[in-house]
Length: 126
Image (cartoon, rainbow, N blue to C red; front, side, top):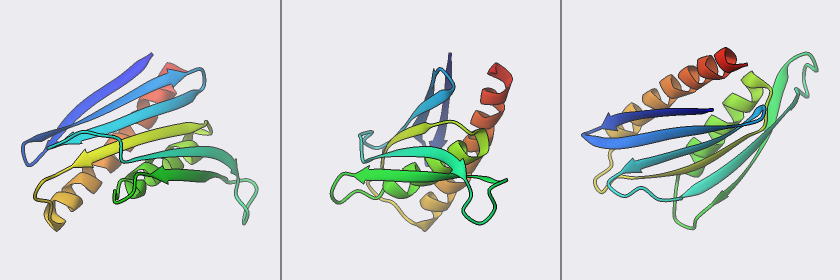
């Protein structure tokens, strides 16, 4: 099973593709002026250190030198792994030729929306 979504930021498409790998998820988030691979994150759910009844996640990331997508990849992988209780990988590569704070804010807001939609999709397919 697969989840696919595309949204636009300043007229540039951003693609989100989620592959269902058993109970685990593998995401690709790419787009803007030049889609690429900028960072890859792996998140593994675990009991929280402060409260073992709460699920948290341990997340590792590898970023291509000079790229900043590690922030998005880590955030998405961590949030989904902790809330869904499954292993999550996120490959992220979004490039805007003329990026500014407004573009970044719009991207962050849309990523939050995508996280919620992916959580709903995951729960429905179980």
